Image (tube, rainbow, N blue to C red; front, side):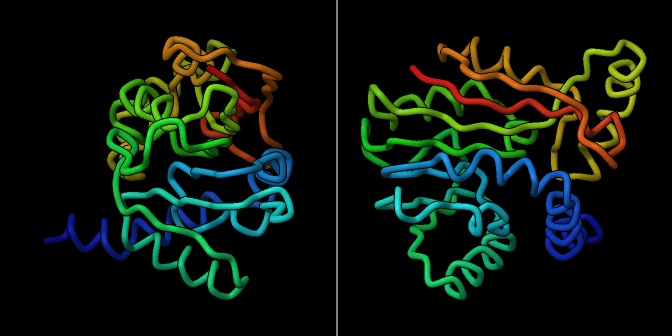
Length: 207
């Protein structure tokens, strides 16, 4: 009962707050305007990326997320901004879209919480056109041994509190090991953010 209440009422608000800090929004602003064509956002959540899309370059947006509680916020935000988004209330391991139908896949602060990210990326590859791109921005394992040791220690507890979020995943390796070519990889600690959750990777990837 307590767990269900936490996941339904507390967790969505907590995730929305943690994922909308000024440094994180600055990261979103770097990545999201590059989306074009038919766009699939994996883990649209409460719609924090919506304000950063350059709609003049986009002809369709699909927003995928298994959390109906978070998506309620995204639906409201899309309506307020008069942006037409087709919402898919499901996980990324099985996407109800046609093969070779997507030009840009957007993944921000989502690969950390997908239970089987490589399975999800396999399905993402299926819906991508041959010349499509993934735009990603994720937090993950830090290069400093002291920080990464703390990430590994805290990760089991962190995941229980933050909806399965993992703070110690090697994001570039997960993407490349799933058969993608990673381009324009950038990485750094976000300012004003605890180091255990503040090491960011962002860039693009193609088939």
